[in-house]
Image 1 (cartoon, rainbow, N blue to C red):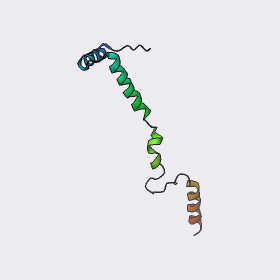
Image 2 (cartoon, helix red, strand yellow):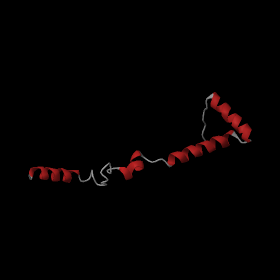
Image 3 (cartoon, helix red, strand yellow):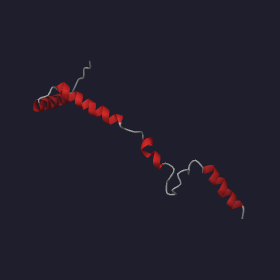
Image 4 (cartoon, rainbow, N blue to C red):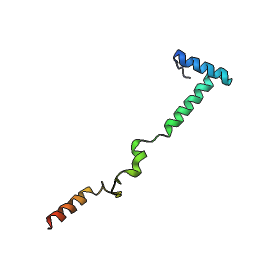
Length: 82
């Protein structure tokens, strides 16, 4: 059992909606909470949402950040080989 205190204006809206739809206030609030909980259960972190894009940038290389040390050594080697 859960008790929730609503501001007067919100409670009046729920009362109006309950009367219009011929439902109880509890049914309306339960449905609203189910919808809220379901929408939050489907959320992903920022990392998960962009995971397939990380490391690609403008180069198109998917392993760019993983091999940065190797790339630096290669560039330095090319610079000093002349």
